Length: 214
Image (cartoon, rainbow, N blue to C red; front, side, top):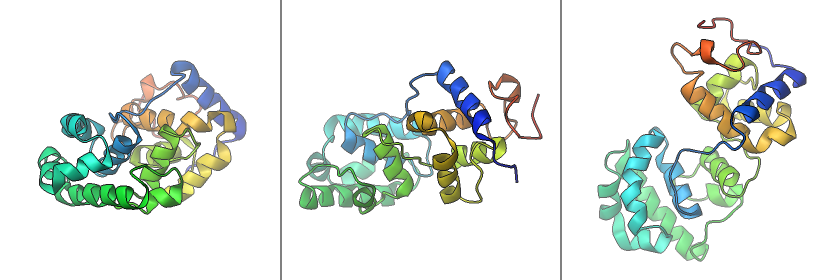
């Protein structure tokens, strides 16, 4: 396993990320916090592009929990049928919406525990919502971040929980807010799984990955 990078190197890495893109944003389309929760939950084992394609029309007619309930299970299923595991996800969206109406007066809660109590919402989804909507420095670790963190030495860990802790422990506080997006975008477009684009990487001189594709 690659060793954990030191503070000064990590600060330089995120300084470069910040210079290249000061305000990185997630790629899931949403119109409010409720549609963000739904979109992130639907993105499990699916691409953001695929989720956006499916939800674009859905969110035009169902952008609140009650409107989603009014649309019904069949209506939700029809809209998201192009997404993997769509039947179970549609059931989760309906169950989630019912709980929000019954227990939270139709308002999405802003604590991790409350978010994770919703069907289809795990720790990663909760962290994405806390970060993107409420601007908390919550770190959602997906496959791109896990790969980049371990390859580069930015956040080393044997599992997603360990990488999440490494991000919180080692990335300077002033970069914590956007760390998730910088890493996910870098992993998605540059530090890709096969044939990483090391020649085009702005941190290739700092990264500890030995098999650089130059």
